[in-house]
Length: 98
Image (tube, rainbow, N blue to C red; front, side):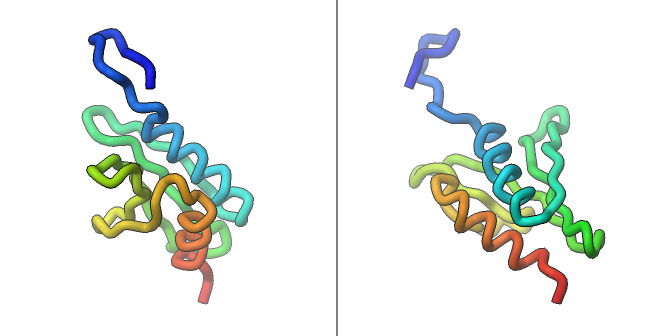
């Protein structure tokens, strides 16, 4: 960890970096992604199945007492952020065409 401008230790990675990493893995699985940076809110990753545009989801990356996690928009954990492959597999499965 490195100090930031306030003299406190900054996290080694940011939520945007985690979301970008997940986005890359989801693109490799055939999904479309867009990083959204709404003013005054946490960034999220908008994910869409290009074969069924109704199958979309917004994914969050949040740090808790037990580390960084990817989260569904309905406040359920997907996978630890350090396990990008597991998170990408789960998102791709949920957004798959039945």
